[in-house]
Amino acid sequence: MTPRTVTVLAAALVVLGAVALLAQYDPQPPAPGGGLLLPDLGEDLDRISQVSVVGAGSESVATLVRGDDGSWTVAEKDGYAADVEKVRQTLISLAEARIVEPKTANPDFYDRLGVEDVEDAAAGGVAVMLAGSDTPVNVIVGNTEGTSQVYIRGADQAQSFLVDRNPDVGNETTDWLTTEILAIPGTRMARVAVTHPDGEVVTVSKADSEQSNFDVEEIPPGREVQYASVANVMGNVLSNLNLQDVEPRTATDEPVTVTEFVTFDGLVITAESVEREDEPWVAFRAEYRPPAEESEADGADVTAEALDLDQRLSPWRFRIASYQFDQMTRRLDDLLRDLPEETADD
Image (cartoon, rainbow, N blue to C red; front, side):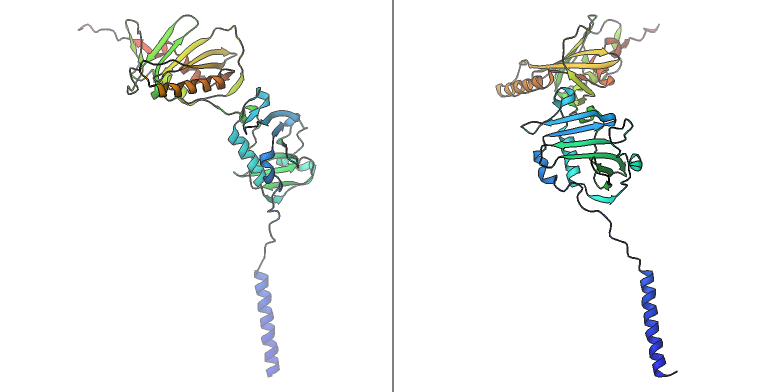
């Protein structure tokens, strides 16, 4: 074999080796997308004045209106307070959403992603429209993918996308309400008195805030409490009271159960409870009644608290969970049992 032949064979081996390496290297094309879905929205968030959420059949889910003070209200609930954090999370998620990949631009396949037009009575997604900025936003938020991705499409665009943020758009009006009604700890509660429409009165109380359990007052002869802490749910019910729905407070001819909650520092919450079509509804008022011992400074604080609560709560009637309604409207039979019969030896 001549030196020239050896050189040619060596060069050929180098070429074949390079080809083999290239064959093993399978570069992936750069992932499409990566850019912001709504690139102008981030700079306009502070200018958004209204968020409209529309569901299937073009039915309005929620119209969220921003006040001059930055608060949000729900128009469909007569201007009741919206969950500001939920509105904020939705807006930020839309502003930060980046395209993971383009999806279908064929309307025949929109329903698979939940991004069909919401005029369709069977539409799977919801339309979100933002007003107030120079560039209005109108997108259809469809099905979720995994825990943090969602399909989305501009309402006036054919192309749909998978994006890396889920704005978690509620599809019920109540999803947008701020849910907390009251958060008054049971350790603060001194007395709870329930007056039923038939005249029965149930009162439980504590002598001081260090007392572990509420006492049931005026127990009839021959009866006793079922167990020591049986009345505690009555004193604790306002510690985590949330709404399930809300409506303006109007006069009612229906008999109501009146429950008065009195704290050691003089805050008085009066609840008027009524069941309507098997739904529990409660209306509240708040006031300050000076307790026997309280400093002037503490009294001023509680007076201000009572005024704030009354202004916030008194215009409304709230639907609450049935179990909390039951705790708020207990009867003596719910707390007491008959004394055990005396034995013959006694």
